[in-house]
Amino acid sequence: MQIHLAIDLGAESGRVIAVWIHGRSVRMHELHRFFHQPIELPSGLHWNLASIWAEILRGLGAAAAWARESGHEVVSVGCDVWGVDWALVDSSGEVVALPHAYRDPRNRRFYQAALAELGVDRIYQTTGIQLMDLNTLYSLLAFVRTSPRLVGAAERLLFIPDLLHYWLSGEQTVERTIASTSQMIDVRSGNWSRELLEPLGIPVRLLGPISPAGTVVGQLRGAVATATGLSPAVKVITPGSHDTASAVAAVPATGSQSWAYLSSGTWSLLGAELDSSCTHAKAQAAMFTNEAGVGGTIRFLKNISGLWLVQECRRAWLKAGQEYSYQQLADLAAAETGGRTLVDPAFASFQIPGEMPQKIVEFARQTSQPVPESPGQFVRCCLDSLALAYRRTVNLLEGVLDRRFDVLHIVGGGGQNRLLNQLAADMLERPVVVGPLEATAIGNGLVQAMACGELADLAELRGLIAGSDLVVGRYEPAAASARHSWLERFEQLVQ
Image (cartoon, rainbow, N blue to C red; front, side, top):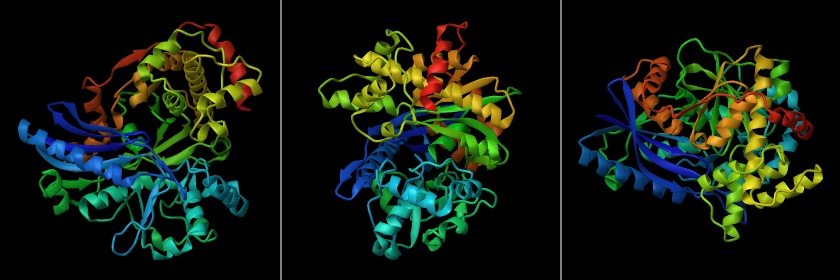
């Protein structure tokens, strides 16, 4: 079998997964999984790239050993990563500074500066991207204005998956789906927007040519082959290098049903796949984003603060000596009464790491709601609120596009939360189909297979997934219930 290795990095964990086509279905095998998180330094919040790279090499080594034992042939490797974050490299390929993480609080100040200098309308109508202070435009502006000497020493900006592809192959490229998250690309031309960058003093010379998903970058560097035991003939191929692009490519949608998708994980990314961008007045008012997808598609979506809320609660309890698995927390939440306390997942303080339970308590007090008192009540509050955010977003999506969606496809690890899946179906009043759970890795590997000629196009890729055993559940909406009384309360909270 020809094996494609998917290096799949989320904002909390990473994995190396073997993906291959077997007959008319797709197979996968997890080889290595690891956790990571940003580290706080005097200069801000940074990604620990050295540790991540060491784990990737460990995973590739495991892949080489597994392939030898099983008689498979590894033919390609590619990386997908969370959006927006980047590094600068100099003329010798040296990383000039440890990359800041997108939740670095300093971004907020430069976000406000850019809005004041350029205006919301100009930024959105140029880029078609949802305005969020975590976008590359603002983190890069922060770096340009606080570290001009380092910027002067740099030759190229590479997004995190581009940097990893460079370390794997020795060749530099910028892949379109990850670049599209930056809010630095003109939504109409598909090229870097000088109109935005030059007035802010951001050097356009740092920005290289953009390549589509499925580009063969090169082959493994000799040093990587030696360190891992893989063949130096292994191709390095860009998948949808933004993890959501790979996840959406793996949505098992076939036939004529109109479908929306939810990529569920640390973030909940909810939207529709379009043939062309949509930036009219309704899209801007609702602040939908137009990101590039695989095969020339547009991912028209909103970013919702997903299971990050639960992850941060779990981290706080662990710090206090209380350890819960995610399954335990889901079970505790399912035993609680729904709708007791609701929050706005987009509330500004919830986006900053640390002390999430206390922030939820403060929000409840400020909005005259019952204060959660147990882990189950905290998590139920988070899940109820996310399901309501999904309802609100689908309503907005349908209003902007003047289209009704028959079904919501949930892909990604968040699909393991059965309570949230059922809440989503109930709130949306339509079926929810869940799977693949490892959609990013599967989409990653199959885009590599497409680049190798094993699949013709995105439609064949999705048909292959639909014919496999990767759909793990279908949730039908419950009959109308008291849950609908939550909607009015939630709308009041998010105004």
